[in-house]
Length: 337
Picture 1 (tube, rainbow, N blue to C red):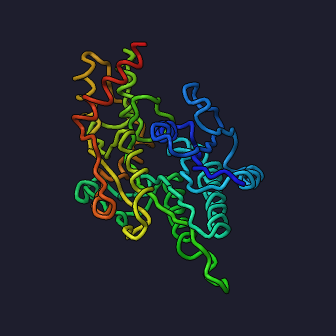
Picture 2: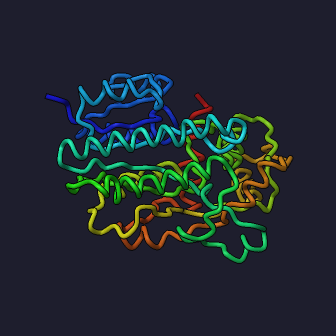
């Protein structure tokens, strides 16, 4: 008999580690985790971990013979900045890897006669505003506004949202019998900030990079202008949103993709908050024109009214609590050790 599991891809990343810790605290689910890297030592033995590639079809063929996959949290991705340096590889990982998992989930849904829940983190990179005037005017964008991404990562995420909707609503629509569809659900994240993991390849990383550099007493040159504004969210709220959307009754969901957000800050405002916590921190500005262009195309805020209405989304951390209770004390303790 196959063992029922929750599959988490990209498990060694920022969101993956935080999500695993939440599940460990609940102690009610068996976790199957996948990443190219090993999990950190503190998570050894807490999951069934496999070092592997989301593009390895043979690996997935073996996994489904041993495990009944009840839910997939598909976190594996090549992030925004890295994707611009290797767009073909980004398409392979972000699109082909997602497509393979959607196909697996669709087949598993039919075989067991019950939908596999497929939870997909998307991004504000799916948006592409044409200029700063429009960005100022349309401060809080809705899910269907300005879906004209300017990056390979954003294109990948937007297309994968559409693939998820296809597999969740229209897969095998010409078949003689009605198939059991997978249950696809997605959140569009703002910039994410973790106190426990160091940023790795995201275009919104200038915020957390300021914090981590200041806590170590290192100088930091911010790669965007002081006026650059995007929405942010701390990692506990990111994980909360994934788990709340996962647990929401399907009949309450009116959309497949939902914005979630917490607070919006300019780079200058972010710097001031860091300086309040770490007086004397050496934070300057050295804008990178290419990364600046990406940030300028992203919205200054997200409209998350649909998530609040359909599944009672509400962040726990506003900007003050995020810095005072989560980010600063934990980052300070991290580097004090």
